[in-house]
Length: 69
Image (cartoon, rainbow, N blue to C red; front, top):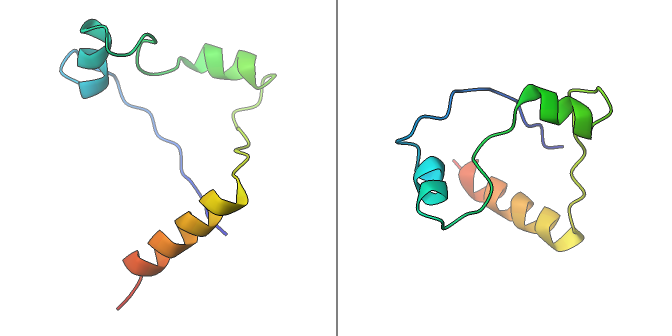
């Protein structure tokens, strides 16, 4: 089983995603506000990721490489 932990950090103008947004490379500003997350999830601070079987297998293979002695 894979567990992700959440964290928050301010997005500074020097952040690569902020620079990409400023340059027009990406169209959505980086980061999500807590308000946006709560609206999208119906008030729950959680999300469910639906991963394809192939992507799950890829994650397992990378994990096996990382955890190898």
